[in-house]
Amino acid sequence: MLRPKHTPPSEAEDEAGEPAEFPRLVPGISSWPFFPEKVAPDGRRLEEGMSIVGSLALDRYIMVPNPKLPAIDKAVRAIEQSWSWVEAEERLRGLGFRLDFEELCGKLQAAGLVLGPDGKPVAADSDLERNFVRIGSVSLRRAAPVFTWVGRSLPVMLSILFTLAAVLWLRGAHPAPARLSGAHVRELSFAGFWRHFLLLAGSFFIHELSHGLVAARFGMPPRKFEVGFYLGFLPTFFLRVGGLYTLPPWRRVAVWAAGSAGNFVLATGAAVAMTYGFGMESFWARVLWLNVMLGLFNLVPFLPTDGYFIASTLTRSPNLRRRAWASLRSFREGGERPSFMLWVYVGGTSVIVMALFLSRMIWIIRGFAVNPTYSTVRLALILFFTGVVVLRRKRRNALKRTARNAR
Image (tube, rainbow, N blue to C red):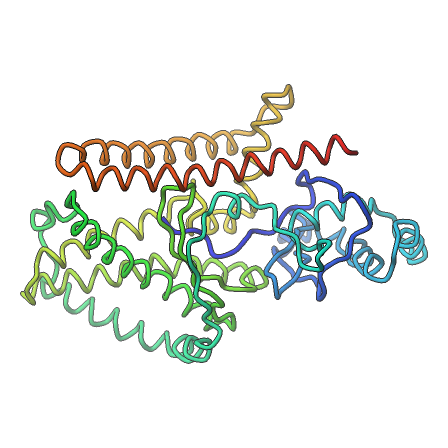
């Protein structure tokens, strides 16, 4: 499971709580184009363009339609130069604009673009942050020149690799399906767990390295490497690449697709190693199987993986996950029925999450007969991290209810 590297921009239409007092914004807020305007051959506008407003340093943004961007831009400047709602509204009216300041500030606060009482940015109110339990991180700022140099050389390196792979494939360097049987079997022991974990970590490393190299080629070297658990039970390794959303859409898609491409290249190398008898055939079969599965899984659009962000970009449907669950909550409370696309997303997400969770539980339960100590430890860790996610969500919902009651 790969967690996305960035917090998606929050749409200006998303529901968010209003700040209790006049906010102080984080420094350096600016705007960038996000989706270009779609125009028909006869000049008719088919779909308005979108922009993002936020902080490149924090990699946090809100999304606004281009027609509203001038007003939002002026409102942000008015907030930065004022000390009260009245003063900010007078400044904006003097520039010929009118806007709901408190609604705008609620969006900025939800995106983590407001300073708290301690002078630090408040936490971003995103699904990813609430559902992810971080257990470690490493800064990559010193490695930025290396990523940039390799990223610039990437086309030549890929050309050589793909040419070599094509030649070897034509010469028969690919294993028969029967030779892959049993490659996915994991041993129910601590030693087996560590062997599988190291293979998984290595495959994730190639996956994330591929993201980082393509991002660096576009001038966005990765900032940090983080490890943790998504939803409390899915091990997650990912790079933080600041500023990805300021890139043009096709470059964003290239960065997100690079991870799975890296896994498929590694799987090809494992197939070559199996065919030419470099030894350790069982090991190379596991590498091949694991990287093919990892590459395919990260293209699934129903979890916050690379496939979700690729699909959202290609269909110009950002924040599909948040909108889908918000529509479902509204429908349960008597609102409008969600669209077909939102129903498909909610159903697909629910099925995949339940399947992943149940498969892990079944594997652990089966393991009690073979190695009860190992299975008990794994079950305890899953329950612990899942409990952290649940408690975090309950605390957030309680804070929201308290804020609504106070208003």
